[in-house]
Image 1 (cartoon, rainbow, N blue to C red):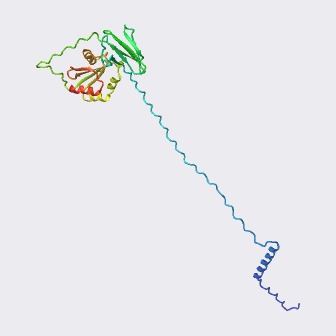
Image 2 (cartoon, helix red, strand yellow; image 1 turned 90 degrees about the vertical axis):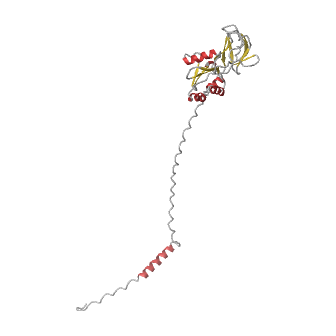
Length: 285
């Protein structure tokens, strides 16, 4: 190298053809792919399996317990009314009150009832034809007690005789020119029933148990009382004496004027409410 001379400049590199480079790389990759047997492109990734969430069971609402069924109210025990003892004469006609002396009578009751005459207190002519039937006669003043069993509570039924043969009825004289007027009430009555509950019959029980009728009389201002023959009450003693004076065997109905206390009538207790009402109406009640 001589002094004073400049060196020759280096040659400028040619610019890179990137399109060509990329084309060559792609061709090389395809060739390598085919060389290894990968003709088709790789399969795509499988789709993810969906996760099935089991349904959460929703509990059913509780069924309300029905209220307890109340126990039925027990029916009240039926009231057993003692059987009726009927007394008739030899012709079958009912005998009300004492039986005639020396005349045959027949006492009977419903089927299943036992009538046991008590003959320990005297000499009685009795013929027992069935458990619930017998016949006989009574002497003057005799009282025959009969034990009634078989239905309801046992009780005593009494059959009485007249104290003596009854004399013929005294003729009633014809009224004079000014006959005494029949008793008239002041409007309000004292109504008394005399009866022995031990010998109460079905007919008497039906009459006395008509509470609406007796309460209706009291609502009108009438006094209503029921007395046993042995009552110690003053009003009851007066009703019992009126019954005896009328020769009536209880049950009896005694009606008096409430203001004056005078007894207007004394009768055997009727067996029906209409008959009692008719009697009260006739006395101005």
